[in-house]
Image 1 (cartoon, rainbow, N blue to C red):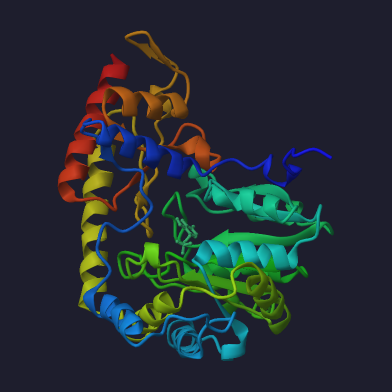
Image 2 (spheres, rainbow, N blue to C red):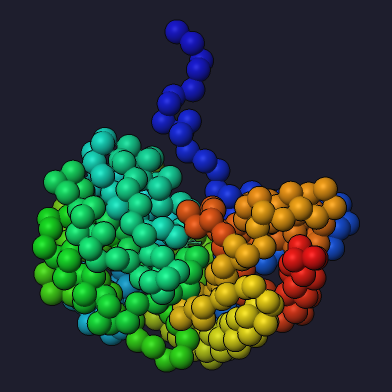
Length: 400
Ligand SMILES: Cc1ncc(COP(=O)(O)O)c(C=O)c1O
């Protein structure tokens, strides 16, 4: 016998965005004036009525374990949301409330995937997807959403990649990190390819509410032939500025819901009772002035960031349709040396920008997209202006 650790976690990497945030926070604690544009959460506080619902839960001693699947009040509010926003009809028994959308994704993969099953995921795409697939002992298979294709998947590639070994595909709309949001027609086109196969469609819609220019959202579950196959993943983190409350959910076919509920009952018992009450309030009444103010601010900052980036010679930044990230191509600045620092790739670039220009960004490589950087505009106007100036200065220094 030895105390060596199991192989299960050895192939996993730590979340790179959380590592960058931790480094930026450490530098700040040491007194360095770091501008952090790497964060993936709204810089707005949770709205007062939602906080009050959490406080009332504590006052009313709603502080015990709940049903593993989530409190009925919240599941009913989720069913109403799916009906009103997405014209999807679920029974509350088809909903599982989870500790964030992240947990809904991991739970779905653990429930659906056998060791060695292939799971397709988008590249560029959220860095947690391949790691979650590995947790479920599946084989992560990337499909590409290239910049030259407007960050849309290539349908021929998708057709080629779906084989008898494929168990599931993860789709993410709007996308982290590209901010691309598919139009309803594009969803129908991609969905038609998926509907030809008996695979799970794990549809991460966490940024659904953060869309700009009044564009509408279609869920993959709304596509003909996909309702039964789709696991809709969503939550309150981004839409209601509630990242720390840790409430997400999934809606799916009864067999998958039962499997995820069993897992959850053994792994966490239930989500935080207080957060579930706050999330119920958010789901019922949260689409208010607070949300509109936040979305307007993101929309305005998006324009400011994209304009400023595209004014830097050599930077190309498409306008994101949703989420709160700009994803410019900075490949023109790679392969340069400045003051003894060689900037071979986007990881070196972000490291140099952090150390020398004191600004934190995420390298595209973290999302499988070398030559890009991700800039979060979930930051104050002042931080964005200072950060963009530092980035411009840095890139101009590199250009020489
Ligand atoms: C694409 C995507 N899905 C899911 C999540 C996780 O959301 P939650 O905080 O609800 O776990 C994130 C968070 O960054 C994300 O970017």
